Image 1 (spheres, one colour):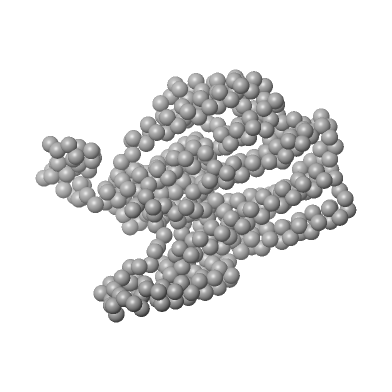
Image 2 (cartoon, one colour; image 1 turned 90 degrees about the vertical axis):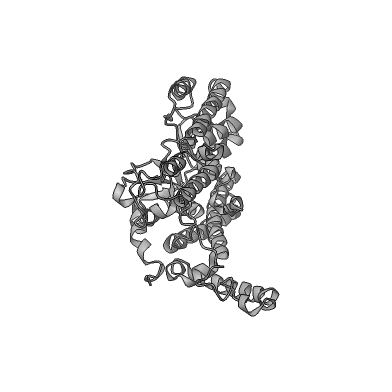
Length: 211
Length: 229
């Protein structure tokens, strides 16, 4: 019953997250001449051959598809930077390295549409995938530390896609914990006469096994 | 819940106008409104001024694109303008649609709660009224009137119910993901109705993400101190 009550509209689809990521600015080097664009989302250009310009990712991809520009991958998308991030991710159990909020989507869009503009593309790709895996694993293991007392959880530098994927589960789990916790007798108000209750509240699992 | 607050579009106006001055584009603001609306369990205040401005820009841009086509400007340029237009239109439609979904789900709750009803736009109020009439009538004719007398209420399980227990309400304690836009101190985060003995002192630095029950950041969201993600 509870599983069904999650309203559809509280979640973003992967496409919607990607849509949002497409507004991130990126540098392109055009190979043609074009007047400035006065778009609703902002003014960009003028575009001159070999002169770098900042544009939203969707615009960069559109031009790239037509062979009108090359895309300069963002600074963090280099083998050197990513290797460093991956090592740091592996070294630390809990901390997440700071990557752009939309790093998953940006790197995927660039791999799909501008592979030839990424130096060492293959390496970069496998590094981003490794980083993603390590981070997901970390998210999963940090979920184990939640309990009924968890009234809020800080997720320091989780990216948009990561948030979106863990959201349904985490939100529901936290809410259930709180609900279950509120059903238990208040352990603070009866300190010593019912130690078992306090124990149950702290470790729900033990109840199942019996004493 | 019981406050009879003022006209729908008053409080958000000032802050919003200020935001617009600080070189945030309306598209950015619309995107933020859309994300907040999508992620929040209850219906938020309709962004009257923002939606007016965006609708105006969209119309202007449509005319511009039509002009471009007529005057035979470079098809590439036209297609880029068209893409920009499509993107903004998508945002606007999705924003309005999410709100309609919420209204459809919670209409009876919205109708009896002034605070929520005041958040709707004029058209949404109209929709809510007419939709609830139609649905109410349908439910009565197809089900309720065929039930025993005690069970014919649209809003209550039976005549013995003390309150409207058949009206779906948004889950205010649902967890949402929020991101602080500015520093938020511990006092702003506590919810008053619960024992806080176990609650850690908590604060948010700008840019930090949190899983947190919606009711605890409701005020902060309304004041623009946090965004939902």
